[in-house]
Length: 69
Image (cartoon, rainbow, N blue to C red; front, side, top):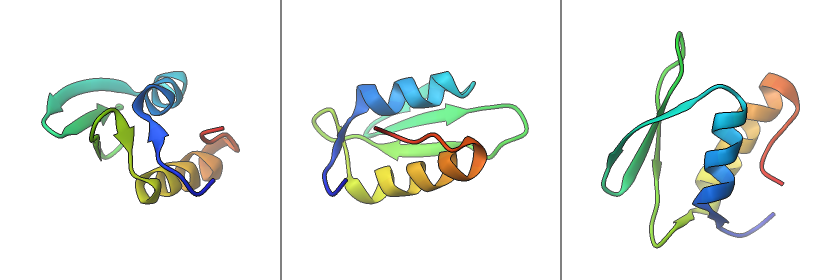
């Protein structure tokens, strides 16, 4: 996947894995989960940059084999 992703996809992925959208601090969306460092995801015009999508995919694939589709 070499493109930006809709924030909705990222939101569903985090929520499915027990993370909570704790705060919106423009342009960041801050996800938190107990005993984990927070994720600050920049969102521009409803999209998440490919570099962040890659990092998120790598993280979730290392945890449970699931990333953004």
